[in-house]
Image (cartoon, rainbow over all chains, first blue to last red; front, side, top):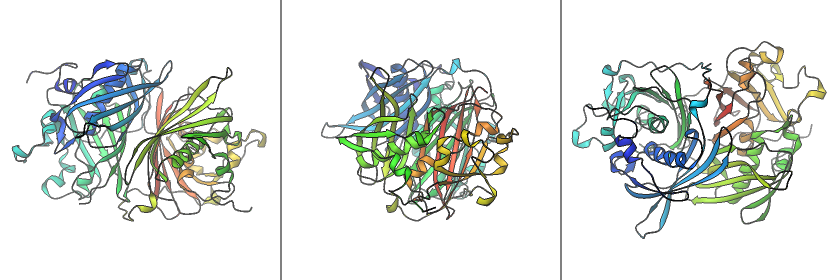
Length: 277
Length: 277
């Protein structure tokens, strides 16, 4: 397979935003990043993150929060951005994703608040106590489509090169492990290397931890916050997602993303509605 | 000491917001919640959270994110709120804290994005795997003012009933433990019981974990997100704060707040600038 380069991949094409005026962008939500009727929340965050990067004077999302208001649908969308504050090392802005409903009324899908900086300008000091997730080698992990009826494979599965740790894939064969944990190798199927925008996708790309807790069904995200801490090295990433607090009909999912140089490049937490299953 | 009731405590008085019009509130940032020149970020978030609760149809912050833009000062302030979306179980809104600078220009201090719901309406199901922090009994923990020159005790210390686990207080005697962890009993000094707004204060009330990593100096918060998961039971709370990733001049602080019934009532994460010390 020929490797796609950053800027020339399906991910870049499908997260493209076209400026239409001051803080207004046209976008097309691609059906290639869906599961059932749902457009992946990480893909949508990457698209909004790209629009904010085009709006703010700093290039990289340091901390970005999205509140998912209504269900996005594949098709045309508008992104509106605004600058809250511009500082020397950080700038802050908001973004909204909007689509038209059946009656042609504009409906807000997602509201974002984020602070951007320049990852390349950060010092190299690292005093991280966190350890990378222990994952079997890539070739010993399971493709999301393994054992699935090819006709049943959701479109987003074909966009990702996701390899699940068998130890957290029991749910897939009807034997959930009972621990709220998922671990996987993550890459883009066309070989595009990861960058900060791809990290916004990576934190929301694994199957829900709720599956390993024996639950099934949708786990709609209410809010997702991602801290991008370092520009990832080329090559596959390791992602671990854990849930420690399932209560009151909600759960949190904490994700860590590690690059090939054993650096913790992103941390995220989302609040989601627990599935009823 | 007579116990203050919810609504009639120093915390309620100092986080009060007075409606001045549609989505506009007057507030007075109290000097009683400061350390040096800095107004505590959790206190400010509680004040903004109160204004959002007055604005939105749902009473409780389920997930609230604050970006700290410029340094707040004790004195008059304005809060502006806006409703993003109103749903059946959740509503989403924004809030801004504004103050006048020396030239009388309005400067934004904090921007907030939050989704509110009704904690009392949540089912009682709990499948939490997280365990409460192991803390010595309250009477065996250290008051923040223990061994301090009374004249040097910051004002906020007098507002809180904070008791640090001696195992995470080595920094206070010049012997930091080297682990990015803080644990403490948390209460309000006037005996007011905790509620969801007080949880927004509790997650940012402990000394910085960076102190136990041997660093000193300010640890300014860039962004703080709090998930309130349960209405806390009356009585003291247990708070644990951990840092796993100190790199590139930034660090994260993850806080968990547990109530007297061993329920994980709040989870938070903040991105902060690492002290230079």
